[in-house]
Image (cartoon, one colour):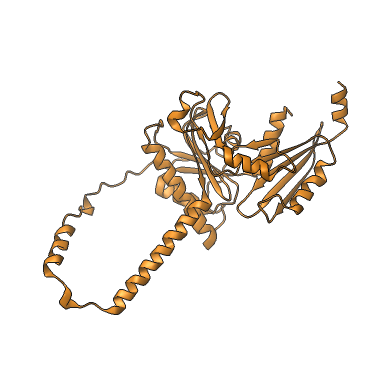
Length: 341
């Protein structure tokens, strides 16, 4: 009783941290028994807990003994599995080097022990009370949708994409993808392409000695070319129904989404490629209960352009609905839920 009276004398301080590709966003909410009293957003050009960021956080938490620090898990090695049964989990993934937890008795989310340790080490001066999986954020954000029919869901962050397939609240498939790693691979491929072009240019500049060409060898090449499958024999792709949910309040028209500049165009195409690859994995991997996907719901935390929606609809025949989200405030709501507020 005395503890509750003492607690009522102080505001609760919720510190919510989102680590992005090259910066850190901090959302602080001051909360009284009557509800939110004030909130503060700040962004720092660092991904570490440097002196400036530490002082900013401490300037608020020292005002009350009741403060809670929460982070969105930014581990590259994490995911979610469609079961909570300890006997079934190894069928999907080896979790021996992971921390994992069952969500509502239905599915499991996990993260790398080593990366989790690094996060806790980074924030040892402030401590960490909650580390939330992006799949928990995704499920909570779309809780009004995942209890319904089959659909693909995605949380799009600055550095990561987390996708999941739900049907009637049951998780069928999930994957967490690192934009930065894929970007580095693309850069390597682009560099190799440039080098190949330079080699080709050198060979063309050197000229071709017609006297060194073996007529028999070229004949063999022509015979090989004759084995190429007739492209006209490829079956036409069936057109899918493009009907929309007229009651959906998401962004459904391109004029609502921003136009892409060169940078966002490249990133949105990269996001599309990652989603396309992941969905192909869902369809092909026999471990998962794959069925045809028609609808996709995107929680957009970065401000995607209209191009991403166009790629997904035209290339993957999906009905795409986009809902903007502020992940830091979503994390804060999860903290309150954990505390029963």
